[in-house]
Length: 181
Image 1 (tube, one colour):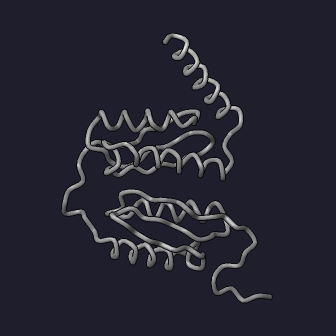
Image 2 (cartoon, rainbow, N blue to C red):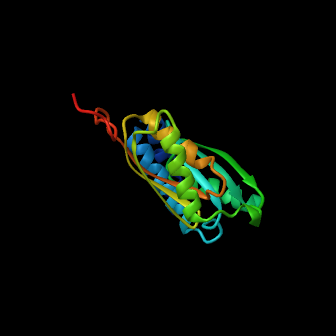
């Protein structure tokens, strides 16, 4: 039993050192975000909470709402287990009022309008779908800055429980509606 604990502890330390020494590239960060989000969704206590995950330079940031301090701590433990260097836990404790519930169709329409009106995102190829308050962003954008802008706009929208980022940065591809030279 002691040997198993020591081996597991060593594996965590080695994984943490690897995460610190080789800072995650954009693709690695997205994979880590998706893994943490999937692990949070698998947990019976956390799957219905509003938790959004971002990973930057090996640091996982948790934002949103959970029902209790125990759930807040559990979310942080799950994120740490993914091999990130550290976790910034910005989760708030408290229930979302029932009157804040917004239909999926309304959320999708609102976000599509926000993206279309945004100077940076107006001509990007972003598809928005919403299921049970979970917004999925798909398509391609021309820069990491545009990807982050789309995520931020989606995350700050009332009624959004979580954002799944499936946006790909494809530099050099003209935006929708661009006139070829």
